[in-house]
Length: 146
Image (tube, rainbow, N blue to C red; front, side):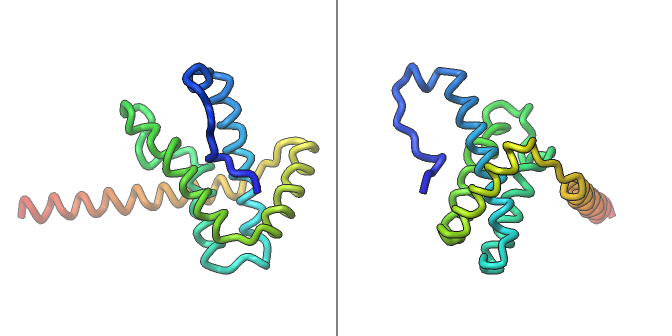
């Protein structure tokens, strides 16, 4: 099984922008494979839930740590997403992953897949979480003043 987390590179390769672009492409492809895999009925419920969270976060336009924050902003993209994918891959059987990779490759050849419903759901979840955080913050400030 190929793993996108395996690196054996020297310093020149580390500084190569092409290498980074290649790794990002592989990470995106593996995220899409994980998306297809967690929808397979052979995957246990706990792996489905974890993989759905990882895929939702990876494809989400909103980051846990905003990218404009120096160093920490890219921490989630460089560590959390790959770690989440790695853990999710450990929960799903190799047979399911092989089938998902074949399916993903076929779909990519026919053009990039677009799932607008999933995008809307992700944005709605983030908006609900933001509203919840604001409500909690306002209540806490009210208690501190009161």
